Length: 207
Image: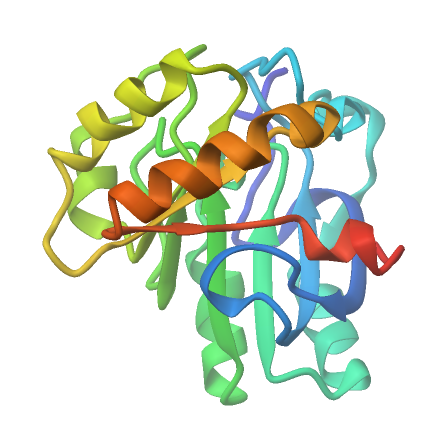
């Protein structure tokens, strides 16, 4: 995954882009245009978009074309996801979207410093690659995927490092939801600083 040959002020490797409904976290239920940037070196074993990891198998799309797609959809909110979108300098795309009055959010593992004035920073730390300190300072929300019981303690360790304004979410890993969701519900009842996040787009059967 060599990203050094990509000029992200002009183009980005894109797995997919589409207009749908945000299914997770703070903006769950809001109409959102998703731009899924290809390339990731975090390697989560339960990732449900592993096909996004290899940026070299996905096309390079011009920034102007990406912004035009958002405008044609008449979307007012863009979620930049991946893959790991913070691998790239997102300044040009984000600035262009903001010039059109379009709000932006990113979904990131926090492993890389963010390049771009994104308005909502969804930090989802992973055990497979440590976050950088900046992620704890910039996070608007932290969404921890719960795969087993030990992840609650791990989530608290990250929460202790966050800025005071960050909203905290616990989300069951989809394949274990029936087993994990009851544990999350009880945990949130005992620890109300946390909220429950669900992948509601999967219940709605939409992308």
